[in-house]
Image (tube, rainbow, N blue to C red; front, side, top):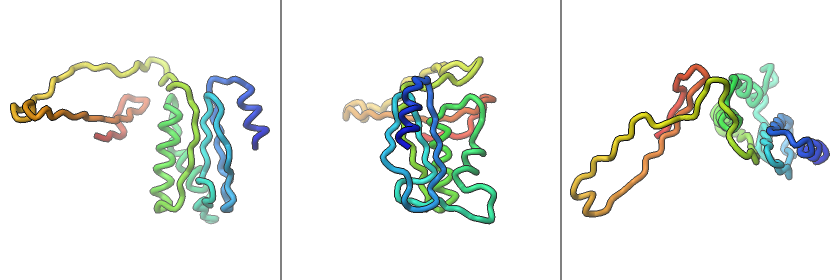
Length: 155
């Protein structure tokens, strides 16, 4: 595997995605460190065996990866969504492993612009909160599909 990884790194491609769905025994694949601009997605973590049902045409990782593929999406988001889906589908017995050294987020696609603040509302603090110097931070994560529709959010 190190020869393949070396050849991929030497290509100096802007992005290299290496997807390994080869964990049919507990030996797994270990010791792979992504080079610059590379994301490596393993079907299962080191020492784990995939949840494989011989009656199904695809294993969980491949099934969830195929279901998650849509044009113009961020590679990180894609593989972390697949990781979450496989965990849930396997009742948390299989954890896909992601190793990445991507430099920057890729363009979302033609005609897609980065998010911008349209309206910013200052928080309304009570006098008690101001006197106690209470502050906080709210983080909102939103995933928007290629049609501009919110498909998930977390506050």
